[in-house]
Length: 208
Image (cartoon, rainbow, N blue to C red; front, side):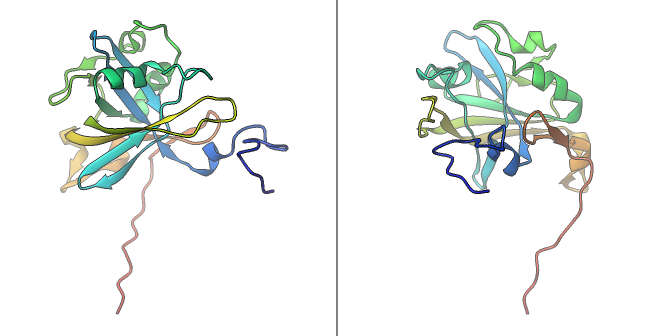
């Protein structure tokens, strides 16, 4: 089949937007933010990835709460305090990560509701997940408004520069991070996830 998503993002026989499945797996960005009054927010975003290694740049895309463009807590907090943390989600934290995706009322702490410990960050204001094996501390570089959807909802692309990186020392073996020990969780389509449990190596080809 072929279709124009500007007309319909899930025409028959599809029941869901296929972009979520086709562009996968996607790492989960577990984003910690803080408002100007000190309230914190922790939310997972599967539209998240790295886009540069030097300088290290990451980005994620929070959408609006409704067609009127009301921002969710993460975006509102970033406009107050343009800093955020990214706690890497290992498999043992997957259920708690999912719990933080619930639509809690403003002022309710996702940390306490998910029985997570807010860790004090070194270079930015927002906390991170203390239980995480790796954390990125970031400053907002730019927030870009993306085109509105047919329903009127709008997403924003938040680009951040990584200014601090925490890695659990037990993950570092012979100078490299053991991906299987970190066991990151990634998002597929629908309600499906996977975790890193196997790896293989391929060296770049050398031309004569």
